[in-house]
Length: 283
Image (tube, helix red, strand yellow):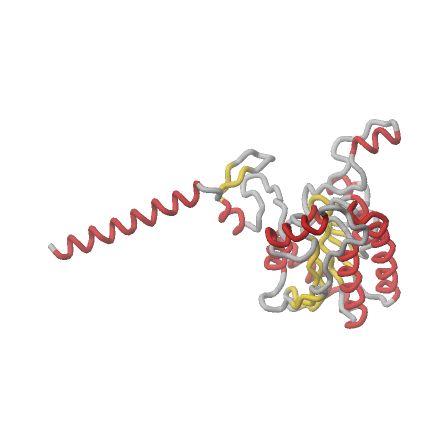
C-alpha cells in the first residue's frame, strides 16, 4: 500500500512537471520562421545555433550569443567596454533611448570587442549587435572597432569582425560618418603590418558599415541569405532609373559577382575561421 502511494505521488509530480513544461512552451517560447512559416520551439532553435531546422534560415543573433557559439569557453577578454555613447549634437531623447536599450539588451553598445581563441587560435574579435539601435555606427562603435584594430596591430594578432548594421547613426550626424574614415584608416595600418583581417557579413549589413570596414577584409565571408548593401532597393532604383535584378543584395548574388569570397553556414563558421588563421600563420 505504501509503495502504491509513493508511485502515485511520483506520477503526480511527473505529470505536474510535464504540464508546467507544456505551459512554459506556450508562453513566449515559440518563434515562427518567416521563410518556411514553421513554428519552432525557441530552445530547440537555440540548440541548433539559431538556424531553422526546417529550411536553414539563419536567424539574427545577439553579440553575446554569437560570441558563445564561436569562442573557446573562458577565453574572451573584452576590450573597450568603458567606451560608451555620448551625445555630441545634444539630440533630443537620444541618451534616454540609449539607456533604455542598455537595460533591455544588457549590453553597453552596438559592438562587443575582445581578445579570444577559436579552436586554440588567438585573435581579436569584434561582434556587432543588431539589437542595439540596429547595430548603427556612432562614435562609440567606431572607437571600439578602431581599438580592436589597434590591439590586433600591437599584439600581432589576426582580426575578425562580424558585421550587422543599419548604417551610420543619424543622432550623431557627421560625427558618425567620420567613423567610416577612421576605421578604414586604422585597417590600412593593419594591412601595412601584414596582419590578417577577416570580415563576416551577417543579416543585415548596410549603409556606412558596408561602405567602410565591412568591405575591406583580406577575406570576406558571409552567412547564407544575408542582406548586404548600401542603400535600399527603392532608393537605388529611383537614383539610377533602372530596374534592379531579383535578390541583388543577397550574399548569394554577391558571391556570384565576386564581392564576397565564401558563404559559410553557422555550423561551419568556427572551423572555417580557425583554418584561415592557421593557414595565414603558416605563411
